[in-house]
Length: 326
Image (tube, rainbow, N blue to C red; front, side, top):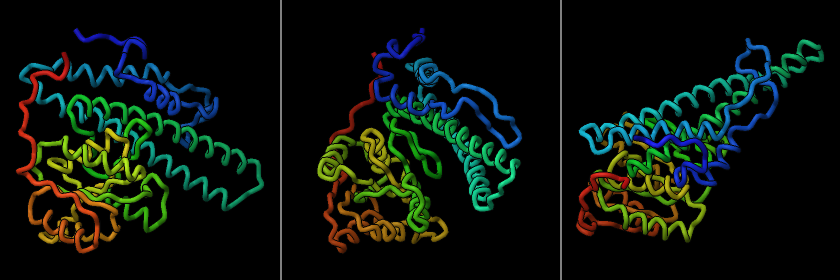
């Protein structure tokens, strides 16, 4: 029977001090009053209890894995869990969209100042709407990141969205889609989508199993470049997935430079050019196809220090254990 957790202390290693602090920081009531739509009258409502929210997220994900573990359904647990985490992500995005709309209205009102009492009330309500939605979005992102961390621990790989960016709280590292990154740089948007720091470029084949040597090398680089931003070629399996798992576990911001399929067969090589244009300070290449060979050549031409890993140099693949938990 799955254990029912009743408090942070009961959950042991599942919820640590950093997670507690993140929940406490996310589930903040900026005002006694709340307003969620332009039609609502402000009312006095509270945020959910952060401890109960953390317990609920932990139990939901962990129970799914526990029920399916060591059964013929075990391989499907990860797919279901991904869906749970993605649900938090999609709801957070919808709240963020409403927050953006409210912020635009607030900006328009501030620009067109009106000394009337009606204007003052509407301005105050719009400010409250922005504040309420901002708090709800932060709480939803916090729960999404916590669920994503449970997913990572159980599956060994980080939660990644199918498309778009995932701007995270302190629980996990942010994952920035390449298009968002380029747009943020062009428009000088907020740091969430335009992480600053020296770029370490990474690419590799879609068949790769030895994560330890890649983790070790990335750890070495991060010790020398603590503020590094990892930029990968965005594949969801193989060497790129290993790099994404490292970034998630180390709290390093990750930029996934995805393929622009409209360019056809040239897309992967043009992506290599885009990555090279950011002038990475170091690069890692894991043997794969001609795309990786082209990437290595461009890095060498640009004088970027290069770390090359060959398929034949991987440690032997170890058989997967029957269960992740005792």
